[in-house]
Structure formats: structure tokens, C-alpha cells
Amino acid sequence: MTFPYTERVLDHFKNPRNVGKLDDSNAKATEGSPACGDMVSVYLKVNDETKKIEDIKFESYGCASNIATGSIITELAKGKTLDEAKDISWKQASEELGGLPAIKAHCSVLAVDGLRAAIENYEETHGMVKERKPTTVEEVRRRLKKVMNPLVGLDLVKTELVTGIMIEKGKVTVAIDLPATNQFAHNIHEEVMEKISPLWDVNEVEVRFTE
Ligand code: FES
Image (cartoon, rainbow, N blue to C red; front, side, top):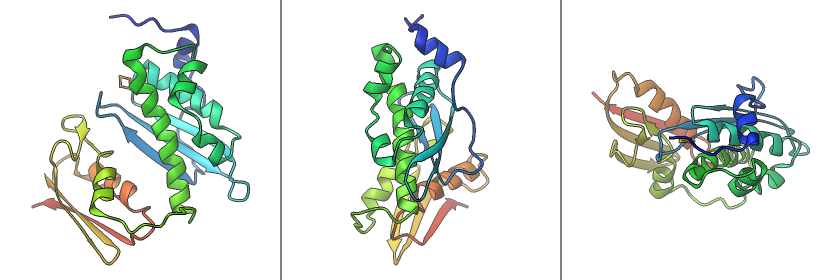
């Protein structure tokens, strides 16, 4: 099947801007799309005084639309304050690219979600969260929906790998129905830590695999 990509999409796909990791980043996030099993990581270097995004890079394991959107949103976000960058929408990204096929809308949503999650990560790790609600099991579950189960390319919650979530005195324990010796256990552990640790009232995260 061929998709009617615009010149601009093809340009950003073939020559993506701001690709790679950022060694001196102070915020990052990885988002996965249950729709297609693809992932995008966004790294930010935010000026702690001005809250401006001084540098930004992304890595995509997605399709051409996802790579092109990642490229365009990093261009749009660079130099903006965090609040300004929050307003970048997938619709705006898609318009900047001259339009994307409707079937590919989720690919640009994924890239924009990656940017928003990286901004959220900065705010959470720099004491900028205004509404400090106590962490609930629902919130932990919501975040676990963003951790992929690489065995099937869907999230941990949807594939029923999460068998328990306990919160006690700042410690969150997540039980995963997978042996610790599984080849993906290490990755899943890292990703769960990455999603749950930044919560403002969480000081310890334990991921329990089955024996
Ligand atoms: Fe998965 Fe585009 S089809 S990111």
C-alpha cells in the first residue's frame, strides 16, 4: 500500500532534524503506541532559570509519519518555554508537514505525546507540579499503560501482565506476571521505574517479577 506523503513529510523523514540522544538532557520520556507497537523517545535540555527548551532530540522506532512528526515538533519546540511547547498539537505538527493521511494520525499523536511526557517529566523532577494530589493506584495504572510489553507490542496493562499495585508510605510496588529471567524483564523494570519514580510523593519503587 502506498501513502500520499507530501514533499515536506518525505523531507523530514529522509533528513530528520534533531535525531539522537542528548547527553546533557535534564528530562526525557518514552511513549509507546498500543495502536502499532512503535515507540518514540524525547530528550530535553531545559534552562532551569528561563524554562526555555535550549536543546531537544528524539529517537523514533516508528514509521515515516512518526519520524517526520518527531522531526517537526523538535524544530517547533526548540527555543520555546515549556508552557509554549505544551501548546504544540499533533494537528499543528500535521499542518506544518502539509498534512498526513488520516490513517497515520496516531503516529503524530505519539510524537506529540512524547514531547508532552518529557515536559511533564521535567516538571515532576523539578518540583513544578502545582496540584500535588496523593498518588493513587489508578494513576500508577495509567502510567503503566505507557509501558510496552515487548512480547506482543501492546502495553503491560492491556496484556494483563500487571497483577498487583500497592502503595504504602511513599513506596510503590508493582507485581508483573513474568519471570525475572525473561529476556525483557530488565527493560520492563527500567521503564516502570522511569514512569513511576518521578511522582512527587513516591520515594521508592519496587518491581516484583514472578520467581
Ligand atoms: Fe506506528 Fe506510525 S504506524 S508510528
